[in-house]
Length: 562
Ligand code: NAP
Image (tube, rainbow, N blue to C red):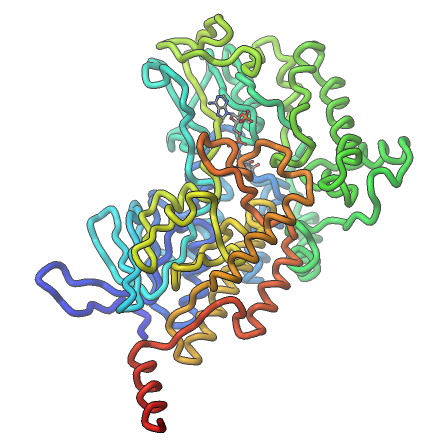
């Protein structure tokens, strides 16, 4: 196989380009996949619907957007030169800097020549006789590829809420997950924000500082921990770089969530009230996602979880001066951490500003959007601009948009109609040579995404390399292995408190979506070990086969003896 595309069998129609691998998406997953597959000498074409690389960081440009995993960890580890040379400016880099980093990676590793931008993959059909995928893109082209890798991202399918009258709104309408590329200035404007998830929690303080008035429409209050973001000094960067071998190894092998931190060895109820409070205080002061790893049973034991939830509720009451507003902001509908915990800069304090109003749309639902207002609970809230921070069709949404047909013409949407089914989150039975990066059934969104992306890409690359050494051309998840894995993912999820929340992890934010806990909760270290063991056992649970010609030769050799 060559490192450049071949043009095979010119028909009357256009010549079909063929690649070893077609990759869908040029975010961090797609770019690293391309880099690794090139290392095997394969021809690769990456299709990206956006106008540039970066995936979710290309689209999510809303005010205040930044990562919630510390940047020195939310970054690639595969190249020591890269991690040594890139200077992150802040503890949590803002979106423009993460996008610059994505662009730097594309340039530094000369990735762009194999990435086709502004191109959506519309269809991928498996041709069983050719053992190849036929991939059709929005530019009208169809190419053939032995393998397809879905690097489509978990949170890239912005969801417009089904609110009556939205189309009649005459002011400026924005979605946090699909933000304009030009700067948006809310100065002097009355702005409404619908939603109070991570995107709103990051953007509300920034918008409030610009707007003449900000109205936040809250359906469900959320837990949020202060980020304690700050500039990184050269000394801090150097100290982390010097420890990178240990930090990266821990994140890959030992951490549950791919983040370097102390592993808790006690449950919350093992400590007395004072000791527990002082530990929560110290994590609150430190800031960030590791608040949840102060004890080892916060995701498992409701009574333990209540102690952390009460602590955060008390903090909200301390910060927010108006007791009624504070009460509304205190989450009560789900255990802390069972929806993705948010981290913020001054979110709760923003509600002390005279130009900010919180509207409880749980008890007074939005009735409709009017040309210049939002009507909720019989009252019209006038706005010049409306920001929808209403989230994503997470994990499966971007895959479902592609018309994917595997063996016997079965589509992936048909197969996943009652919820996604995968073996290890990597493949789905009936869809040979189709890999998913950070798909449902893998730790994915419960982890530092870059750690999980690197692990999946490395695993897929090794699997394809292993097959090539043995002249094998097809790999497919075994249905039994898949069923067992789906049951295991489900069983682990239900041994925790996570399913108690109506979260996007469960698909609960999309009306009609099957409510299945999608990511694998077992932890990235344990999951990596399982994937490594499967590979070491000759890809146990995957069926692999040789090319038809080779199979025919093997069969005729066998029959000559019979
Ligand atoms: P989200 O967590 O799904 O939050 C959506 C919000 O919109 C919720 O408050 C939801 O209320 C509300 N909502 C949805 N539909 C509504 C409707 N029809 N009417 C009224 N309210 C409605 O979405 P997100 O904030 O964009 O975050 C999604 C995920 O992206 C995060 O969990 C995180 O993993 C990732 N993210 C990360 C960062 C970061 O820090 N790096 C930043 C942003 C996002 P209900 O809760 O009642 O459904």
